[in-house]
Length: 125
Ligand SMILES: [Zn+2]
Image 1 (cartoon, rainbow, N blue to C red):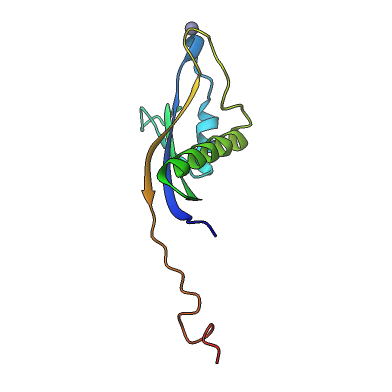
Image 2: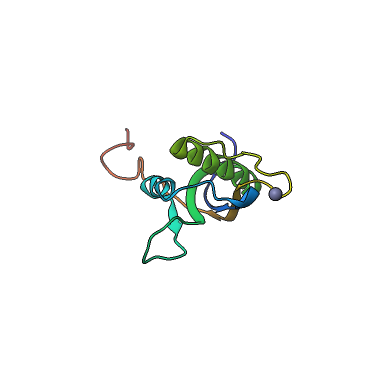
């Protein structure tokens, strides 16, 4: 096995009102929340639609850069499955894409495999 390490990739989603309108509804943000995304509501009391949502993806990769790419792609794919929309929607050509995804940070996660370390298994004579 290659030198794969485990990473937590934090991905932020932002909505851009390309063409002068917002694409996602309050229900869309509720779907994202139900699927584990953390939605930042501009007005928490009203819990209207958000503009930003974040998620963390756990991936195996050879480097931080690779984890960044894989985690970013996974987050987009997850978002697409949850919402049934195209994350790469082009939007208005002067305003740019309506859906923006950015890897916020990548953290190496140390995990220890306990297999074979207790007396129940692994100690074969
Ligand atoms: Zn425009």
